[in-house]
Image 1 (spheres, one colour):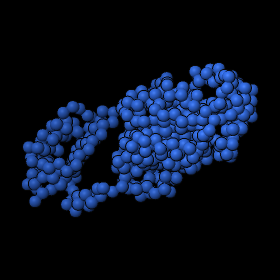
Image 2: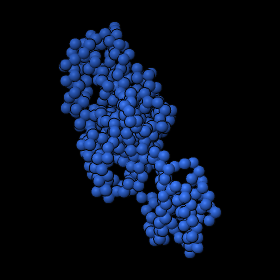
Image 3: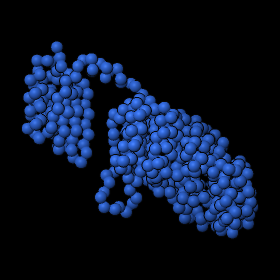
Image 4: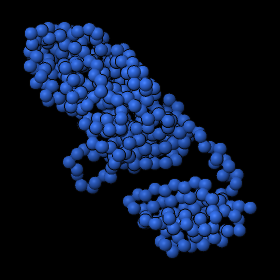
Length: 400
């Protein structure tokens, strides 16, 4: 005859506790069926599920007394064989990862999200903090907070929409992913350039220098919102740049305003062996500048025709539009021997939607409303390196 017991230990953490506990269990010939622990602010919560001969019930009581004298609160909870077998049958069930991101996270926000999880019939099995510890005093860099909830069960599409709507109301971002083998094994990340890797639309900068800023900006905004055909609008805008000196391009390329977190993101991705690509409806002149600075592997963007150091007002074919971006992403994945489920695409405009839909993980980053509405994942509160959180990478594991 045997007894199964769940031992819960809480108290101030210190080195050697686990060693001492397991040593005492070993002396009694105890089988360990499961074990887990967490430490928050040097305070330990440890759970260990054990099986032992029923004759050793007294030994478990003695173990509890020893832990109490060591300053720990102890709870010994008997588990029936039927309860244990039911628990065993639940292994292998689908799991869902809910990632919560914001500049800070409050109890009110978590209460709303937790209620949404419970209403879906999902159970929160584990909570991890991926962001660094938040200082009390103001920091020089913008703060960021990220929690990862591991949920037992598969999330329905309606759940994703519901949680994203809640997050928008709470001024947070959430990402919901199946906890499958590829979540931590993505291998290719493709980025839009303008208003994604850089905090500007380069064509608008060029237009300002050409004295046609208002005209081009209005066309750009409508194109990115999906109100105009991208290729037609691109040609219309570039035509207004005719006669602009190439030196203007060089000047703008020297001071492209990088999006928050770009350098940290690329440094970390590169050291982890990811392939990176810029797939842009912008211009390869500026994509090449970012490639040199960030170490991007591939750049595909539109080419401005330049004759005698001046723009002709023409874009050389082929045009990199929405369909081209998705096609190039697929071709790069095949070239690198990477499954599409291992790809990530990041963009903000309507011409990124095909690419976001084709990727294993499509992320609308500080995106237009139409893009956020049609995307499964959106980040609007943090820098672009918060994408690393969606891969389960903690702040202390990042290399920037």
